[in-house]
Length: 419
Ligand code: HEM
Image 1 (spheres, rainbow, N blue to C red):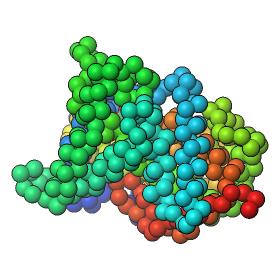
Image 2: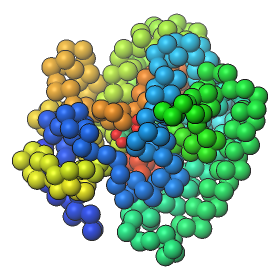
Image 3: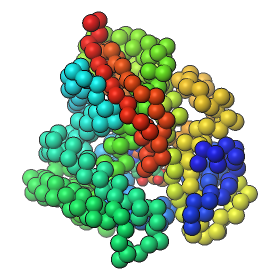
Image 4: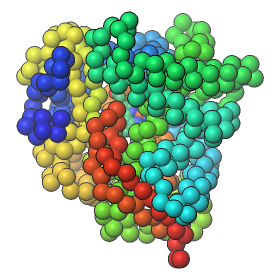
């Protein structure tokens, strides 16, 4: 992909990926066409997405009315006013999760991906579920979702193989999806009976109605919760992992983040109103997501014939949009491989093409968790750096998977500051 991106330099080119022959689209103007101007012509319905649909259903991860109903509910439930209201709880979860992490990382080096996943689960658990499941169950559910997703990789890579033909991963997928149902369905059932009146996402989905005016089914709600895990958990945990790797490579930047954390948190616990003041920290996270954009391939299928960047797209043709490659186009990002949070100073952002940066996608399917992650990640960085010295080891490169995990083990060691 990186080689293709370098050769294309923003032009639309064909990718030789097996029988698909999708077109790679990276230039911001072409993205504007696909995601905004002609968004009605480009849907998610790729074959790869159909495999994923067995896990995440036809609600928020699908298209059409089921998607629209879930999207409206989730956008509302994760909106600015909600985050302001839930901010105290989110900040408290971050503080507790960081202390738990430090407790383990003081005794011995811990695996960064495992720990960031655990930390993300601590923070999303109350937001997704209210207080219905404990942290242990949340970790188990996250593990089951990750197993099911991993088991689908073969089917996603070879979607033309009919379901009746056995493939590697089939049994593991069945086992994991049954385990997910066993964990999730009783929780949904209980929540429905007890009256879902909380501000958490599960309650919002249980209260929400489809466009036919009827409540969403338990199955729809369950698959949406799984989709939220798929969309929000691994990407957040890996982005935070890359943040530690990049801060270790750039101690001058780490020192500035710490200085900001000391000034803003002033030795106290993280609070929601700190987020707005953690300006440099947020620029650092934006630059982490520019270089390591977990959405390295966002597929779309054309409904009708079209032309993108002068290249004909036939009806049924697949496009692969790649924020990862868009973020490395030298035309918009001089010296693109250099880590430089200054690229996100207000003036620089204003002068850049609005679609040169899209780690959370754009248009109708734009990430509903963007503001939540901005809050979570800024508070995590500030809380850790204001209280601890953190030392990551390992010098990984990204490895191609559903997201972009590090290709080698990254460990973290933490000690309270001043010791
Ligand atoms: C670093 C963290 C994250 C990244 C990089 C990320 C990235 C993305 C991207 C690129 C899309 C667009 C996909 C498309 O156009 O087909 C997306 C959609 C989505 N994201 Fe995120 N996301 C992150 C965190 C989260 C979190 C924390 C949540 C939940 C709280 C979440 C929930 C969703 C959902 C539900 C969608 C589908 C929206 C729709 O189709 O209408 N994401 N995300």
